[in-house]
Image (cartoon, rainbow, N blue to C red):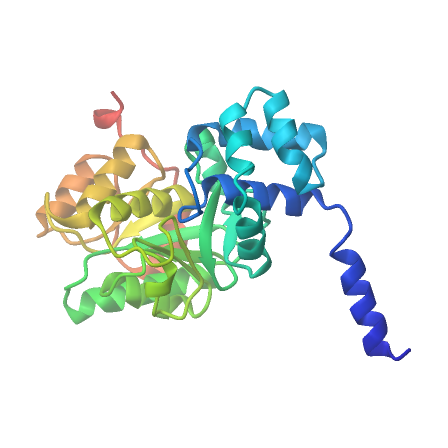
Length: 300
């Protein structure tokens, strides 16, 4: 028997060993990954599902429906009994097409969202295991604004962070270039529409086109994944960047830094709501040391 045969035998053995991580990942994908065959489970109960499986030490997929039924999670148990559901989810996970809360690269900051955190998402590429700085902004902006997005992302990576952005043209694309590989794009459409070549996550099924609703979900995840988020450019009361930034301030998803632009009405408004100004990318390190302001005007 040569070395190749030995290695193949080891891999075959490992694939048959009971594995709690694998079991949890597949069950979460089967229940909550959009695009699965059959009905979806109510996402707000994913913490109960994961907790029940962990407490039971679930290592075999076949036992998952019985464990969930025992804990009163009847609807979830019924979904797992769909003839194609677990097999479909297992194939997606084996191909590396999904990331769930049990994976090491899952953004740790999302756990603060509790039951509102996404239990599983579609994935392309390898997600950086890092604390993230968000960089967001409008699509159609002048070159100096794009240069700011590029440089501030580059500075964030120099300081040891990854960069999370939205996969759009303009400021998002400039930030992805500046991050030089240490970037995660969260998409407002399915992963099969992704052309950026960077690691990406999406809530939508792979073939789903862009929609405003998906963009809103994506915006909240960008801010929630970030230690701080830099708003490079926004239009006052217009567009997704403005809506995402004001929603993040209202929900206190993370502190916001806004590119210094005193002539911008959006800049002044976001500052009034609790964001802080960032004059130059080189000042990012100092800005990150300051505690984020709590936007008391929006705390109600």
